[in-house]
Image 1 (tube, protein in one colour):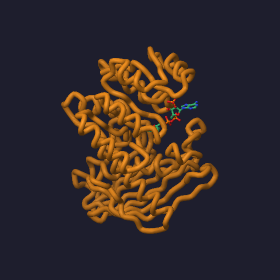
Image 2 (tube, protein in one colour):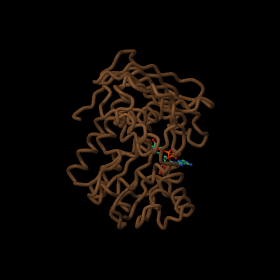
Image 3 (cartoon, protein in one colour):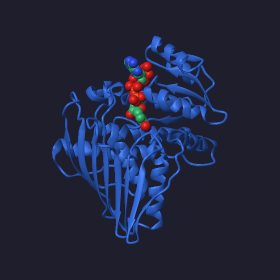
Length: 333
Ligand code: NDP
């Protein structure tokens, strides 16, 4: 599969170029940047043979099958629609778009063009989260009562930029991290959060956008979810807990890009460590996307999954801004 990168981004350089090249027969042929010098430097640094500032060069001037979109969030919609219009399969970064309506337009366009649109929610590709989901599905935890998510981290200096000062580019911890937590909860429970209360805060880092949020969600089956997302916590470490009538899972350091962490299962029989696969999260995301393109499987997170995680984040934003308990609006989905 030949890939075009739309966006000379950090996540492509740190994870996705390697993840694409790890697949047999996959190749990155070109990269789009809005700045010709940056695009050229990026291509040279990563051994990509071409770079361009013109989207049409990627979509029609090169012989690619798929694009990976990792520009700032405001650009995902127009770039995805152009790629879909050119008949290319699209693996798009989260959040899929700036609004649920825009994300739904992307899904409908891909359906109409019969191309794959997937969302790069990496966490559901982690061996740790797959293992926790298996425990939930096996009934070891009984009826699920609640989930607590600890996703307050210190945003590394090189990732600050638009994330901490530009709402028009999609900055803020809610579009950045709440979408991942929403996707993980949906992945675990196979149901969609229904109502949200939330507060947000802009402390030491955010300039015009929130750098911290806490929220509580409910689901149709009565699970209560408590979440904490932040860019400003150097020592908190991440984690997730799932509590059921027959057991609890306490997982630490698992809300991360790396295949790391610890999972403890506590039941009436005592405590045990849960083993899990330590495969690369991003390689699995690309492999599942390729299966969807080949018609032999499904993307790990589909376009609809991207719409739904964004809908929860939008509800958190609305609840935090208004102080009102907010119903999650999944639009047509
Ligand atoms: P970056 O800031 O690294 O890249 C975003 C855009 O910023 C690039 O497309 C590039 O524009 C521009 N840019 C990059 N470096 C510079 C620079 N030195 N000077 C000026 N502009 C620059 O963002 P991320 O890689 O962190 O995030 C990109 C997308 O990926 C976002 O949608 C984000 O939410 C998502 N993401 C997903 C992760 C996941 O695990 N699923 C993890 C991290 C991010 P141009 O292309 O025009 O050159």
